[in-house]
Structures are given as C-alpha cells and as structure tokens.
Image (cartoon, rainbow, N blue to C red; front, top):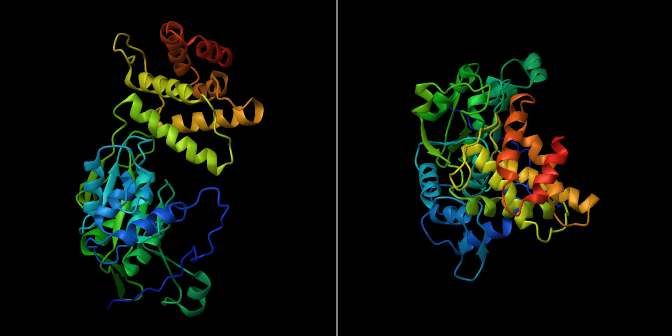
Length: 376
C-alpha cells in the first residue's frame, strides 16, 4: 500500500527575507531563472522548471535572444555540466565527486534551483546524521498518544522530494555512517521508501532525483559501499586548469560575497588575488608555476574555496581597518592560517617556501615582508 505525502515546506513561498545573509540560489538569481524559463521552448522532463539546455545555460552563463545576460555559476568544462544535467533527466542519481573546494555544493544547489525551483530539500551529512534524516522521523507526542499513524510521521527531505517529484540534495555523503548511507539503496534502486510501521510506502513520482556530493580527501570519510556507488552516475569536478581560470573564479565569488556584505570594491585588488591563487596552486602542486623549483606541500587542501575566504577576509580588513585598497598585509594572515594547519610540520613548509620562492620572486617584496611579519 502506498501513501501520499503532503509535506509543509520549511521555507514558505514569498517569506524569504530580503536581507538574508546568504539567499538561496532560487532567490538570489530569481531574475535569471525567470528569464530563462520564459524564453525556453525546448522539451522539459516531467516537473522540471526548464529544459536541460536551459539548466546548463543557467550554470555556465550566456546571453539570451532578448539580450538578458546569464552569469556563469560554474567555471569549468562544459561537458561536465552537460553530463550532470543529463543524469538528472534519467532515473540515475548524481554523485558530484572532487577534492574540497571544487564547488560541489555550489553546483548541487544551483542544479536543484534550476531543475525544481527549490534548493532547500537538503540532508547535511555529518558523522552524527541519523537514519531518520534520510527516511522519516516521528512526532513523539502524537506517537505516544495515538501510536504509529500518518499524522505522527515526520517526512525527511528525501521523502518529501519523492512525493513532490523534486530534486533533493545530500551533502558530504561520505561523512554519513556507512549503515545510514545504505538507507538510500532502496530509494535509488526501487524508487520507493517503505514505512513498515504503517504497512505502507512512499513511491517516487516522476521528476524525483537526488544529487549527492562527496570527497575522499578529508578526515572522517566513510567509503561508499559498492552497492550504493552503483546507484549513482559519478561526475568528478576538477580543480581549475589554470591560474587565470582560478583567479577569475575567486574574483567573481569575492565580488558577489563583498556586495552581499556591503563591502566596498577594492581597487587594484586583482594583483593580490593573483598572488593568493599562485601561492595556493604552487603549494598544492608541489612545484612553482614555471616548473623549475619543487616545494613541499602542507597538510591542508588549499582549495579555491579557501582562497576565496582569504581574499574576502582581506577585503574586510582593508575596508574597516585600512584605506579600502587590498594590500599584501590584508591577505598575509589569512594565507598563514590556511597553510599552517599543523603548527609543527606546516610552519616549516611555509617558511621554506617564503625564503626559497617568494623572497626571490621579482615584484613580490612587499608580499614577502607582509608574510614574514605575520609569520614571526
């Protein structure tokens, strides 16, 4: 016996605060989504807000026939986005895999916003994520008073997405305990969620799909079982191919974050962004950009996301405690904090890099002095 679910959204339509610190993708880019949907005349899968072509355009950016500019949400190979979008149009779930900082969460949020118009159906994976977060829970007052019943059942985001034909997101899947991960096997293979306490089940309606993100670089990772991994189409999100691409990503996101925090744009800050990105890439790759000098790599990931954080913090320092111009002293402390995660080993790596590479690099004297000062 199947049971329909009529869940109540945690984000009622029209009640999103206009001054939200981080608006959901469907709110922050509502104009672009509406423009795309209005001009999209291509076939749409069941319950999709727009066609797969329009979803890819939303993520990659472009110019619509009426001149509307769609900003790029993801800077990377177009084929990766096309494969991800196509996967969601099938009955296969999508696994976005990559090292930390490769925009897995960012891409999953924008995919859900474009496909379903709602990115808030979310299970955040942690070491303490219970099975109820994926299946369902109970209203214990109702349960004790009347026993197991439909009114006592509290649907999870996964159950709600199945009933609505929407896209649900599971973040950091490999941080969820293995036995809880495997709760998804029946959902993904049979497209049904049994409720044995009621002798019922929830069957997924057309349009339902699931996007999971995972990485295998952080500590506390629980490997996916082979049975669960087979239920996914895996798309690997790579690190930016070049310095220019990564600088562009960092500059775009810093600008967006800065505007949301009312930080003034930092004139002449592009050079400092390039320096931060160059330092992170060289330490991450274990070799300088010209390929001539090998360097040791620290224990941290030094991801693009961390570069964005360093530059954003530097921009705030420049705005509130400086003259508004982003300078080496504004980013030096953030770089030190990102690189030196292990106070013993990483500090040695950082000092060697400063003396062997930064000190000898033409035009980097001010940057070297600022980093030396905070490292002392």
